[in-house]
Image 1 (cartoon, helix red, strand yellow):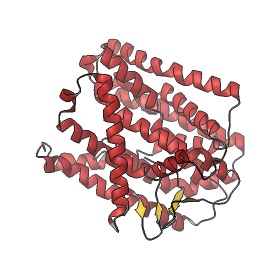
Image 2 (cartoon, rainbow, N blue to C red):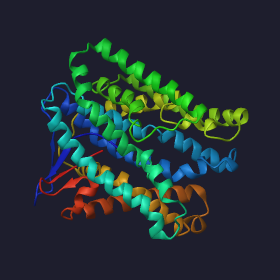
Image 3 (cartoon, helix red, strand yellow):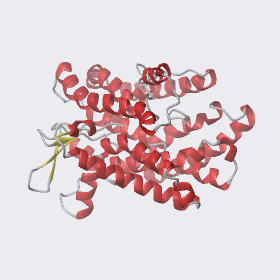
Image 4 (tube, one colour):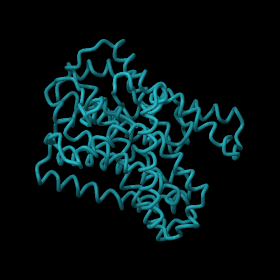
Length: 382
């Protein structure tokens, strides 16, 4: 979760939002589509996690419920890569003038506290709920793997990307456009091949290496930052995106028949499968092209989008708690019709997470766990 180092300031007593960014060519364009991309991506993440349980249930493969959820999950897989690309679009700008020390202190301080708190929270949550069946050694193993909970891997990805950003920024400053494009394609291709081999061999990365394959998306964000598609280009990107959705689901069914139900058969749903890479790049370009023009600071929709965008970091961190709470309350029995349950649950989890983020963000000191900082009235966006 995350990206976009655009800090948003809420002026006390005024309801207006002010974006603080480095003043460089193209920054206004990045901001123009940044809020929309964050809001769409965080909504996609929540919907994906709500539908994921059914899509990963091998016993339901081939049923109408499985097809529906699998297509939705496939169509929302672009969200996390989009967050990473948005970070690259903003942080790899060569004109940013700050020392590595200043960069680390500023960025790692913002993500360090939320990472520590929410890792501990989700590791201890089963004990609080009385359902703990893991030993301390197993919990430590999850932490070392960078997965204290299924969504927390992203925090370790972002921290790793932050660590290499000053070095990568030097490369971005001195490389030609052709050289940077070649490096981006090469890293994405290596990530794709490495993930395929890792799925086959059962390789599992650690918290210290999770970020490495995402470097390709990070570079792609910078490379595509100011690329805006023509109408024909938008049609082509949308066509590619739509084709990849059923291809991912159909390919998974075919893989299950060849190798049987396993992690291997779900390879196309990983973030580095060919179909997900194409969907992620297409989605980034489509959203960037659709919202390329800066929006004036007026209108309810603009204010709502800015407000939700400001809370995306907290929403990402909190939403699994409300999803698990709904499961414990027996939402499936209350709403047995799948599409009604998925739509309702996605909306309730998203709104509840947003409200919780807003409430926590107003508490001194506590606000830091959702990326807010009352002292400077700025909030972290993923």
